[in-house]
Amino acid sequence: MRERLMLALLLSMPAYPQAVPGLSGITGVVRDATGVAIANAEVTILNGTKGIERHLTTNSAGAFAAPSLVPSSGYTVIISKAGFAKREVLEIELQVGQNLTVDATLFVEARWFGLTFRIPPSQSIKPARTSPR
Image (cartoon, rainbow, N blue to C red; front, side):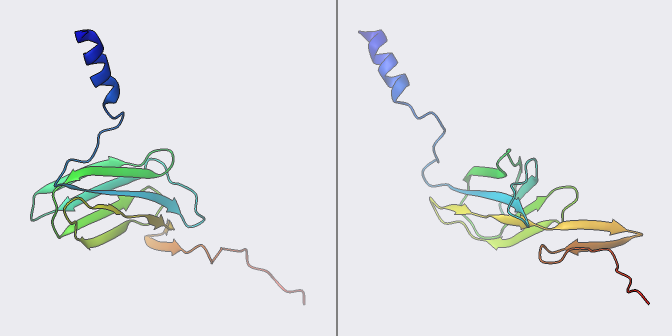
């Protein structure tokens, strides 16, 4: 009987950790300008007044999750990946129990002779055309 009770308790537990009551979280998906998910992007969540610094990496679907954050104002989310311009979301405020979604689009960034170029999706680099004379 005791074994059955223990088994029933184990099976009733959630498969994924649930948010802790009274805390908050930040989740999101990182994509490029064409909408393709960016895997292995670095996500940093900071709150200087609370001394919080959390480092995450996006999964193959470009998703990240930072549960169990202290409700407060002053959060910053920094997202970066080699070959893309860094994205920062500033002055985020988390309420008690809130799970805030911070989705981000990263734009291609190219460096050439010390200059940095950010290429928005609506612009493409085309070879120069010469007109016949």
